Length: 404
Image (cartoon, rainbow, N blue to C red; front, side, top):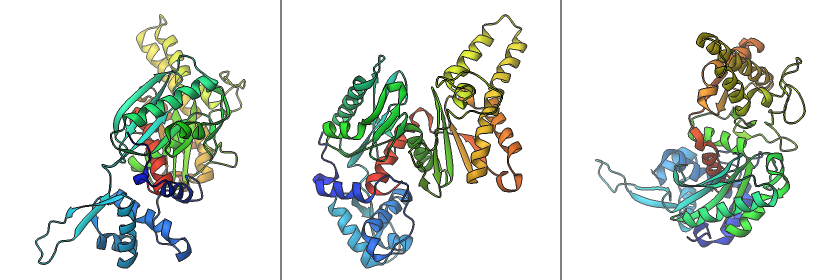
Protein backbone atom coordinates (compact mmCIF):
# COMPACT_ATOMS: atom_id res chain seq x y z
CA UNK A 1 0.00 0.00 0.00
CA UNK A 2 1.30 3.44 -0.86
CA UNK A 3 2.29 5.42 2.20
CA UNK A 4 3.06 8.70 0.51
CA UNK A 5 -0.13 10.38 1.69
CA UNK A 6 -1.91 13.55 0.49
CA UNK A 7 -2.22 12.68 -3.16
CA UNK A 8 1.52 12.15 -3.53
CA UNK A 9 2.39 15.77 -2.71
CA UNK A 10 5.13 15.74 -0.06
CA UNK A 11 5.17 19.55 0.02
CA UNK A 12 1.44 19.60 0.73
CA UNK A 13 1.91 17.20 3.62
CA UNK A 14 4.59 19.39 5.15
CA UNK A 15 2.42 22.47 4.72
CA UNK A 16 -0.47 20.83 6.53
CA UNK A 17 1.58 19.68 9.49
CA UNK A 18 2.96 23.17 9.92
CA UNK A 19 -0.39 24.89 9.41
CA UNK A 20 -2.57 22.63 11.53
CA UNK A 21 -0.32 21.36 14.30
CA UNK A 22 -2.17 19.64 17.13
CA UNK A 23 -1.58 22.43 19.65
CA UNK A 24 -3.56 24.39 22.24
CA UNK A 25 -3.17 27.56 20.17
CA UNK A 26 -5.89 26.46 17.76
CA UNK A 27 -9.51 25.47 18.31
CA UNK A 28 -10.12 21.93 17.16
CA UNK A 29 -13.00 23.09 15.00
CA UNK A 30 -12.60 26.25 12.93
CA UNK A 31 -15.94 28.06 13.12
CA UNK A 32 -15.54 31.46 11.49
CA UNK A 33 -13.62 33.24 8.75
CA UNK A 34 -10.53 35.16 9.82
CA UNK A 35 -8.37 38.08 8.74
CA UNK A 36 -6.96 37.95 5.19
CA UNK A 37 -3.38 37.44 6.31
CA UNK A 38 -4.40 34.23 8.10
CA UNK A 39 -7.21 33.28 5.77
CA UNK A 40 -6.10 30.66 3.29
CA UNK A 41 -5.09 27.79 5.55
CA UNK A 42 -7.83 28.53 8.05
CA UNK A 43 -10.55 28.78 5.41
CA UNK A 44 -9.45 25.53 3.78
CA UNK A 45 -9.91 23.91 7.18
CA UNK A 46 -13.25 25.68 7.61
CA UNK A 47 -14.54 24.19 4.34
CA UNK A 48 -13.31 20.73 5.33
CA UNK A 49 -14.83 21.06 8.82
CA UNK A 50 -18.19 22.03 7.33
CA UNK A 51 -18.19 19.00 5.05
CA UNK A 52 -16.87 16.69 7.77
CA UNK A 53 -19.73 17.63 10.10
CA UNK A 54 -22.57 17.92 7.55
CA UNK A 55 -21.74 15.57 4.70
CA UNK A 56 -22.25 16.34 1.02
CA UNK A 57 -23.17 19.94 0.23
CA UNK A 58 -23.21 22.26 -2.75
CA UNK A 59 -20.75 25.10 -3.13
CA UNK A 60 -23.57 27.56 -2.41
CA UNK A 61 -24.47 25.63 0.77
CA UNK A 62 -20.87 25.86 1.98
CA UNK A 63 -20.74 29.60 1.24
CA UNK A 64 -23.86 30.16 3.34
CA UNK A 65 -22.63 27.91 6.17
CA UNK A 66 -19.16 29.46 6.40
CA UNK A 67 -19.91 33.09 5.58
CA UNK A 68 -17.30 33.05 2.81
CA UNK A 69 -18.02 34.48 -0.63
CA UNK A 70 -18.93 32.19 -3.51
CA UNK A 71 -15.77 33.28 -5.30
CA UNK A 72 -13.65 32.27 -2.31
CA UNK A 73 -15.48 28.95 -2.02
CA UNK A 74 -14.98 28.23 -5.72
CA UNK A 75 -11.24 28.84 -5.37
CA UNK A 76 -10.90 26.81 -2.16
CA UNK A 77 -12.92 23.90 -3.53
CA UNK A 78 -10.84 23.80 -6.71
CA UNK A 79 -7.67 23.68 -4.60
CA UNK A 80 -9.03 20.92 -2.35
CA UNK A 81 -10.17 18.87 -5.35
CA UNK A 82 -6.70 19.23 -6.86
CA UNK A 83 -5.25 17.89 -3.60
CA UNK A 84 -7.70 14.95 -3.77
CA UNK A 85 -9.16 15.92 -0.39
CA UNK A 86 -12.69 16.55 -1.64
CA UNK A 87 -14.60 15.11 -4.56
CA UNK A 88 -17.79 15.80 -6.50
CA UNK A 89 -20.32 13.11 -5.57
CA UNK A 90 -23.22 13.82 -7.92
CA UNK A 91 -26.17 16.11 -8.46
CA UNK A 92 -28.71 17.09 -5.84
CA UNK A 93 -32.14 15.58 -6.40
CA UNK A 94 -34.65 18.39 -6.83
CA UNK A 95 -38.06 19.04 -8.32
CA UNK A 96 -37.23 22.68 -9.06
CA UNK A 97 -36.64 23.83 -12.64
CA UNK A 98 -33.09 24.52 -13.76
CA UNK A 99 -29.79 22.72 -13.41
CA UNK A 100 -29.44 20.89 -10.07
CA UNK A 101 -26.51 21.77 -7.85
CA UNK A 102 -23.39 19.60 -7.82
CA UNK A 103 -22.66 18.13 -4.40
CA UNK A 104 -19.16 17.81 -2.98
CA UNK A 105 -17.85 15.96 0.04
CA UNK A 106 -14.60 15.01 1.76
CA UNK A 107 -12.96 12.19 -0.18
CA UNK A 108 -13.79 9.74 2.60
CA UNK A 109 -13.20 6.58 0.57
CA UNK A 110 -9.73 7.49 -0.70
CA UNK A 111 -7.94 7.89 2.64
CA UNK A 112 -7.57 5.86 5.80
CA UNK A 113 -5.87 6.55 9.14
CA UNK A 114 -3.64 4.31 11.21
CA UNK A 115 -4.10 4.52 14.98
CA UNK A 116 -2.05 2.99 17.81
CA UNK A 117 -3.16 2.55 21.42
CA UNK A 118 -0.14 1.84 23.64
CA UNK A 119 -1.93 2.24 26.96
CA UNK A 120 -2.39 -1.45 27.84
CA UNK A 121 0.31 -3.13 29.89
CA UNK A 122 -0.12 -6.48 28.10
CA UNK A 123 -0.52 -5.62 24.41
CA UNK A 124 -0.07 -2.79 21.92
CA UNK A 125 -3.26 -2.40 19.86
CA UNK A 126 -3.54 -0.74 16.47
CA UNK A 127 -6.11 -0.26 13.76
CA UNK A 128 -6.72 1.01 10.28
CA UNK A 129 -9.64 3.43 10.55
CA UNK A 130 -11.88 5.36 8.19
CA UNK A 131 -11.95 9.16 8.33
CA UNK A 132 -15.14 8.77 10.37
CA UNK A 133 -13.32 6.77 13.04
CA UNK A 134 -14.66 3.33 12.15
CA UNK A 135 -12.28 0.39 12.55
CA UNK A 136 -11.43 -1.40 9.30
CA UNK A 137 -8.65 -3.72 10.50
CA UNK A 138 -7.34 -4.40 14.00
CA UNK A 139 -3.94 -5.83 15.00
CA UNK A 140 -2.43 -6.60 18.41
CA UNK A 141 1.16 -7.20 19.47
CA UNK A 142 1.83 -8.89 22.82
CA UNK A 143 4.30 -6.91 24.90
CA UNK A 144 5.66 -9.96 26.71
CA UNK A 145 7.21 -7.67 29.29
CA UNK A 146 9.08 -5.57 26.71
CA UNK A 147 10.27 -2.15 27.83
CA UNK A 148 12.74 0.45 26.56
CA UNK A 149 14.04 -0.04 23.02
CA UNK A 150 12.26 -3.39 22.70
CA UNK A 151 8.89 -1.73 23.33
CA UNK A 152 9.75 1.04 20.85
CA UNK A 153 10.55 -1.61 18.23
CA UNK A 154 7.19 -3.28 18.79
CA UNK A 155 5.32 0.01 18.37
CA UNK A 156 7.22 0.88 15.19
CA UNK A 157 6.67 -2.58 13.70
CA UNK A 158 2.95 -2.45 14.51
CA UNK A 159 2.61 0.92 12.77
CA UNK A 160 4.43 -0.37 9.68
CA UNK A 161 2.28 -3.50 9.54
CA UNK A 162 -0.90 -1.43 9.74
CA UNK A 163 0.23 0.86 6.92
CA UNK A 164 0.60 -2.27 4.80
CA UNK A 165 -2.89 -3.40 5.84
CA UNK A 166 -4.49 -0.17 4.60
CA UNK A 167 -6.56 -0.59 1.46
CA UNK A 168 -6.24 3.02 0.32
CA UNK A 169 -3.79 5.85 0.91
CA UNK A 170 -2.82 6.50 4.54
CA UNK A 171 -3.46 10.08 5.60
CA UNK A 172 -1.36 9.80 8.75
CA UNK A 173 -0.66 7.84 11.91
CA UNK A 174 -1.97 8.80 15.35
CA UNK A 175 -0.48 7.32 18.51
CA UNK A 176 -1.94 7.35 22.01
CA UNK A 177 0.86 6.67 24.50
CA UNK A 178 0.87 6.44 28.28
CA UNK A 179 2.87 9.00 30.19
CA UNK A 180 3.79 12.62 29.54
CA UNK A 181 4.09 13.49 25.84
CA UNK A 182 5.26 16.86 24.53
CA UNK A 183 4.20 18.68 21.35
CA UNK A 184 7.03 17.21 19.27
CA UNK A 185 5.79 13.65 19.82
CA UNK A 186 8.49 12.90 22.37
CA UNK A 187 7.43 10.73 25.30
CA UNK A 188 9.02 12.58 28.20
CA UNK A 189 8.19 9.87 30.71
CA UNK A 190 6.30 6.57 30.57
CA UNK A 191 7.59 4.58 33.55
CA UNK A 192 5.67 1.37 32.81
CA UNK A 193 7.38 1.16 29.42
CA UNK A 194 10.76 2.34 30.66
CA UNK A 195 10.64 5.36 28.34
CA UNK A 196 12.32 8.68 29.07
CA UNK A 197 12.65 11.32 26.33
CA UNK A 198 11.78 8.87 23.56
CA UNK A 199 11.23 10.49 20.13
CA UNK A 200 8.40 8.13 19.28
CA UNK A 201 7.07 10.34 16.48
CA UNK A 202 10.45 10.38 14.76
CA UNK A 203 11.00 6.65 15.20
CA UNK A 204 7.67 5.75 13.58
CA UNK A 205 7.92 8.38 10.81
CA UNK A 206 11.34 7.11 9.80
CA UNK A 207 9.94 3.65 9.07
CA UNK A 208 6.36 4.36 8.02
CA UNK A 209 7.13 7.42 5.86
CA UNK A 210 3.83 9.14 6.65
CA UNK A 211 3.06 12.01 9.04
CA UNK A 212 2.81 10.88 12.68
CA UNK A 213 1.19 12.61 15.66
CA UNK A 214 1.78 11.29 19.18
CA UNK A 215 -0.18 12.33 22.29
CA UNK A 216 -1.01 11.04 25.74
CA UNK A 217 -3.67 8.32 25.56
CA UNK A 218 -6.18 10.23 27.72
CA UNK A 219 -5.73 13.31 25.52
CA UNK A 220 -6.51 11.10 22.53
CA UNK A 221 -9.58 9.67 24.27
CA UNK A 222 -11.07 13.08 25.01
CA UNK A 223 -10.88 13.92 21.31
CA UNK A 224 -12.88 10.80 20.45
CA UNK A 225 -15.56 11.86 22.92
CA UNK A 226 -15.57 15.37 21.46
CA UNK A 227 -15.85 14.31 17.83
CA UNK A 228 -17.87 11.10 18.02
CA UNK A 229 -19.60 11.27 21.41
CA UNK A 230 -21.47 14.54 21.05
CA UNK A 231 -19.60 16.38 23.79
CA UNK A 232 -19.18 20.16 23.67
CA UNK A 233 -16.02 22.25 23.90
CA UNK A 234 -15.71 22.22 27.72
CA UNK A 235 -14.98 18.65 28.64
CA UNK A 236 -12.88 16.46 30.90
CA UNK A 237 -12.48 12.77 30.17
CA UNK A 238 -11.20 10.60 33.01
CA UNK A 239 -9.60 7.39 31.79
CA UNK A 240 -9.57 4.57 34.35
CA UNK A 241 -7.53 1.45 33.65
CA UNK A 242 -4.21 0.23 34.96
CA UNK A 243 -3.68 3.88 35.86
CA UNK A 244 -5.83 7.00 36.03
CA UNK A 245 -5.42 10.02 33.76
CA UNK A 246 -7.52 12.73 32.19
CA UNK A 247 -7.81 14.72 28.99
CA UNK A 248 -9.13 18.28 29.00
CA UNK A 249 -10.79 20.55 26.47
CA UNK A 250 -11.59 24.13 27.43
CA UNK A 251 -13.40 26.32 24.92
CA UNK A 252 -12.64 23.77 22.20
CA UNK A 253 -8.90 23.96 22.89
CA UNK A 254 -6.91 20.96 24.13
CA UNK A 255 -5.25 21.78 27.44
CA UNK A 256 -1.73 20.38 27.84
CA UNK A 257 -0.13 22.45 30.59
CA UNK A 258 3.24 24.16 30.83
CA UNK A 259 5.09 20.84 31.10
CA UNK A 260 2.60 18.77 29.06
CA UNK A 261 1.21 17.05 32.16
CA UNK A 262 -2.28 18.59 32.40
CA UNK A 263 -4.71 15.85 33.38
CA UNK A 264 -2.13 13.75 35.25
CA UNK A 265 -4.48 13.38 38.21
CA UNK A 266 -3.64 9.77 39.06
CA UNK A 267 -0.81 10.65 41.44
CA UNK A 268 -2.55 13.51 43.22
CA UNK A 269 -3.18 12.52 46.84
CA UNK A 270 -6.92 12.62 47.57
CA UNK A 271 -7.64 13.64 51.15
CA UNK A 272 -5.46 13.87 54.24
CA UNK A 273 -6.35 10.56 55.86
CA UNK A 274 -3.72 8.37 54.23
CA UNK A 275 -5.03 5.54 52.12
CA UNK A 276 -3.66 2.71 49.99
CA UNK A 277 0.04 2.69 49.13
CA UNK A 278 0.59 3.81 45.55
CA UNK A 279 3.25 2.50 43.15
CA UNK A 280 4.79 5.99 43.19
CA UNK A 281 5.54 5.63 46.92
CA UNK A 282 2.88 8.00 48.27
CA UNK A 283 -0.25 6.99 50.12
CA UNK A 284 -3.74 7.91 49.01
CA UNK A 285 -3.12 8.80 45.35
CA UNK A 286 -6.28 8.73 43.25
CA UNK A 287 -4.76 5.90 41.23
CA UNK A 288 -4.25 3.83 44.37
CA UNK A 289 -7.97 4.12 45.12
CA UNK A 290 -9.37 3.87 41.60
CA UNK A 291 -7.09 1.89 39.26
CA UNK A 292 -8.77 -1.21 37.85
CA UNK A 293 -6.27 -3.77 39.23
CA UNK A 294 -6.73 -2.37 42.75
CA UNK A 295 -10.53 -2.47 42.53
CA UNK A 296 -10.55 -5.98 41.09
CA UNK A 297 -8.23 -7.21 43.85
CA UNK A 298 -10.43 -5.78 46.62
CA UNK A 299 -13.62 -7.12 45.06
CA UNK A 300 -12.11 -10.56 44.52
CA UNK A 301 -11.06 -10.71 48.17
CA UNK A 302 -14.59 -9.83 49.28
CA UNK A 303 -16.16 -12.44 47.02
CA UNK A 304 -13.72 -15.13 48.16
CA UNK A 305 -14.63 -14.64 51.81
CA UNK A 306 -16.99 -16.89 53.78
CA UNK A 307 -19.35 -14.01 54.47
CA UNK A 308 -23.07 -14.31 53.63
CA UNK A 309 -24.06 -13.11 50.15
CA UNK A 310 -25.76 -10.00 51.51
CA UNK A 311 -22.62 -9.03 53.41
CA UNK A 312 -20.44 -9.63 50.33
CA UNK A 313 -22.71 -7.32 48.34
CA UNK A 314 -22.59 -4.70 51.09
CA UNK A 315 -18.79 -4.91 51.11
CA UNK A 316 -18.69 -4.65 47.32
CA UNK A 317 -20.77 -1.47 47.40
CA UNK A 318 -18.60 -0.09 50.19
CA UNK A 319 -15.43 -0.60 48.10
CA UNK A 320 -16.92 1.00 45.00
CA UNK A 321 -18.46 3.88 46.94
CA UNK A 322 -15.15 4.68 48.64
CA UNK A 323 -13.40 4.80 45.25
CA UNK A 324 -16.19 6.94 43.78
CA UNK A 325 -16.01 9.39 46.68
CA UNK A 326 -12.25 9.83 46.15
CA UNK A 327 -12.85 10.41 42.46
CA UNK A 328 -15.49 13.01 43.35
CA UNK A 329 -13.10 14.78 45.72
CA UNK A 330 -10.50 15.09 42.97
CA UNK A 331 -13.05 16.25 40.39
CA UNK A 332 -14.73 18.85 42.62
CA UNK A 333 -11.69 21.12 42.69
CA UNK A 334 -11.32 20.87 38.90
CA UNK A 335 -15.00 21.63 38.32
CA UNK A 336 -14.71 24.60 40.65
CA UNK A 337 -11.59 25.93 38.94
CA UNK A 338 -12.68 25.45 35.32
CA UNK A 339 -16.50 25.55 35.59
CA UNK A 340 -16.71 22.51 33.32
CA UNK A 341 -20.08 21.55 31.88
CA UNK A 342 -19.33 17.86 31.38
CA UNK A 343 -17.09 15.10 32.73
CA UNK A 344 -16.96 11.73 30.99
CA UNK A 345 -15.51 8.59 32.56
CA UNK A 346 -13.99 5.85 30.40
CA UNK A 347 -13.20 2.36 31.66
CA UNK A 348 -14.82 -0.96 32.62
CA UNK A 349 -18.54 -0.29 33.04
CA UNK A 350 -19.03 -3.25 35.39
CA UNK A 351 -16.78 -1.42 37.89
CA UNK A 352 -17.39 2.24 37.20
CA UNK A 353 -21.07 2.56 36.27
CA UNK A 354 -23.62 2.50 39.09
CA UNK A 355 -22.43 2.77 42.69
CA UNK A 356 -18.99 4.23 41.96
CA UNK A 357 -20.14 6.89 39.49
CA UNK A 358 -23.16 7.80 41.64
CA UNK A 359 -20.86 8.36 44.62
CA UNK A 360 -18.59 10.56 42.49
CA UNK A 361 -21.54 12.67 41.33
CA UNK A 362 -22.88 13.07 44.87
CA UNK A 363 -19.45 14.11 46.15
CA UNK A 364 -18.88 16.68 43.40
CA UNK A 365 -22.28 18.25 44.03
CA UNK A 366 -21.72 18.29 47.79
CA UNK A 367 -18.35 20.02 47.41
CA UNK A 368 -19.16 22.68 44.78
CA UNK A 369 -21.52 25.64 44.56
CA UNK A 370 -24.88 24.50 43.21
CA UNK A 371 -25.57 27.94 41.75
CA UNK A 372 -22.61 27.69 39.38
CA UNK A 373 -21.74 23.99 39.15
CA UNK A 374 -24.97 22.14 39.89
CA UNK A 375 -25.56 21.47 36.21
CA UNK A 376 -22.31 19.64 35.53
CA UNK A 377 -22.95 16.32 33.83
CA UNK A 378 -20.88 13.27 34.84
CA UNK A 379 -21.46 10.19 32.70
CA UNK A 380 -19.86 7.08 31.27
CA UNK A 381 -18.40 7.21 27.78
CA UNK A 382 -20.19 5.23 25.08
CA UNK A 383 -17.08 4.95 22.88
CA UNK A 384 -16.10 1.54 24.25
CA UNK A 385 -12.70 -0.12 24.18
CA UNK A 386 -11.69 1.63 20.94
CA UNK A 387 -11.91 5.13 22.41
CA UNK A 388 -8.15 5.79 22.25
CA UNK A 389 -7.88 4.43 18.71
CA UNK A 390 -10.78 6.61 17.55
CA UNK A 391 -9.16 9.54 19.32
CA UNK A 392 -5.93 9.01 17.39
CA UNK A 393 -7.96 9.32 14.20
CA UNK A 394 -9.19 12.71 15.40
CA UNK A 395 -5.59 13.70 16.17
CA UNK A 396 -4.66 13.05 12.54
CA UNK A 397 -7.74 14.81 11.17
CA UNK A 398 -7.19 17.81 13.43
CA UNK A 399 -3.42 17.94 13.11
CA UNK A 400 -3.24 17.47 9.34
CA UNK A 401 -6.55 18.79 8.02
CA UNK A 402 -7.74 21.09 10.82
CA UNK A 403 -11.07 19.29 11.40
CA UNK A 404 -12.63 17.21 14.16
